Amino acid sequence: MNVVFAVKQYISKMIEDSGPGMKVLLMDKETTGIVSMVYTQSEILQKEVYLFERIDSQNREIMKHLKAICFLRPTKVLHKLINPNSCVSDFSNVISKSDVKSLAEADEQEVVAEVQEFYGDYIAVNPHLFSLNILGCCQGRNWDPAQLSRTTQGLTALLLSLKKCPMIRYQLSSEAAKRLAECVKQVITKEYELFEFRRTEVPPLLLILDRCDDAITPLLNQWTYQAMVHELLGINNNRIDLSRVPGISKDLREVVLSAENDEFYANNMYLNFAEIGSNIKNLMEDFQKKKPKEQQKLESIADMKAFVENYPQFKKMSGTVSKHVTVVGELSRLVSERNLLEVSEVEQELACQNDHSSALQNIKRLLQNPKVTEFDAARLVMLYALHYERHSSNSLPGLMMDLRNKGVSEKYRKLVSAVVEYGGKRVRGSDLFSPKDAVAITKQFLKGLKGVENVYTQHQPFLHETLDHLIKGRLKENLYPYLGPSTLRDRPQDIIVFVIGGATYEEALTVYNLNRTTPGVRIVLGGTTVHNTKSFLEEVLASGLHSRSKESSQVTSRSASRR
Image 1 (cartoon, one colour):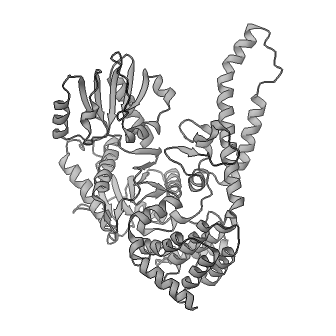
Image 2 (cartoon, helix red, strand yellow; image 1 turned 120 degrees about the vertical axis):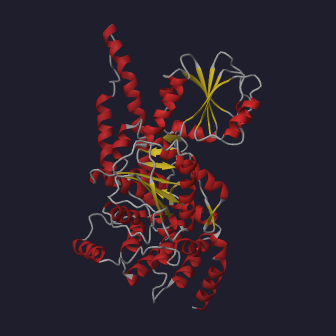
Image 3 (tube, one colour; image 1 turned 180 degrees about the vertical axis):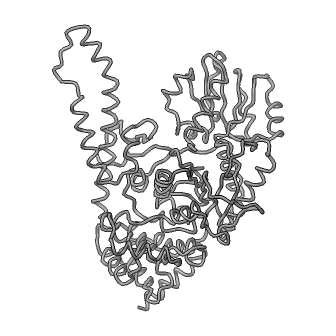
């Protein structure tokens, strides 16, 4: 189960099916992102596609000598599709008969030669990770209707592209998870002919979860390369904006990090920051060895030929080195400037341990540190509020006053209570902080005895425990019921996990490691988006739950001032 390969195959087949000759690829905003995640422009050029255009471009030139391949989402703007070119229309999802009819009616010049469905209706981020790039999918606890429709389409397209007709389980504590499960099931029932794949001995499983069940993971600083880049710089469809980096050169203002086309990134994306520093040094040393001598003499034709042959490879390596040195250098600068090593250590303590007095003391100490930004200060208080929400010695009012005294803006102070409203004890279907079963308690006890290898990466997302129980056949049906009467008798082998409200790169790392260490089990993770802390807080704001928590934040401020 490889989502990058699945989308790549679709695009390759789409181009091959259009026949030989020069082609133009017309895309909409979403399909442009879908294609750019799996193919570079130079790779597409090799397939005789010489022009890339947006379907909504206002000043598109008419080129009758080019064959048009239109790769679009099946939305209500189909009439824009018609071009005075010979045209093959490929849609990224199931297209209804009424849409085909309206397309035919709009095609007055009869240029549409063929209409096909290719189910690449999602962003393939890593081989085992996909996203729908939807931020703010719910209103309160319920779906935004338009986003429910888009999510259903994206998830069913994923199933079709992987050729899976799964059994479905969902998180019982989430009404949104149940609703999405029902919508996916309806599409599978309605389009049953599309889902008639070769039966496997153990049916695949789709597990639908809700971000509300673990609001801790997206609030933590990250220390593996891919996750850290997203947390501190932001990754948008493999692109990183470095324009705000002090003294950045013009050609490095935006860089692309893609494991498909960057060997160094592919080999290092899951390694921790200390290892990256060492590997960057090795990369630099290799580059120095291969660098052409400045006084290299090109005396013979053979010398010139060797130089020309090696130059593209050298140029590519030069680009890779300068890109990663710049990115890692900026990460180092931010870690130092924002005192993130110390901040992260306290975050990990809040997420993984239960020592209230130590945690409180450490937060208060960091809130006095001028290097700690208002963003990081608020994040620490959010983690405290989630963990010690019902602790007998809860000191949240005092911490809120400390935030105010530090000059933290009202926006961030209000977000503390909004995050608790979004993912607090009342909402969660699980207990994130104090394991109840004997096995988990023993594990925690042994971990305490041994200590941890790395204080910055001791946290494991709640998803790890959920998947571990699922793989071992111990995931409780009263918490994660099946949709419909059928249940799995055997342990699942092909698992698709979807997180409403967004997944994280830390969870993607968990899935990568489980795939690597669990023979016979293949897991793919997806979400409405892939979060860092900033986008997660935007998700919380978009849910509208902050307006309900406004009153409680005012109460908090008043009680704090009485202290």
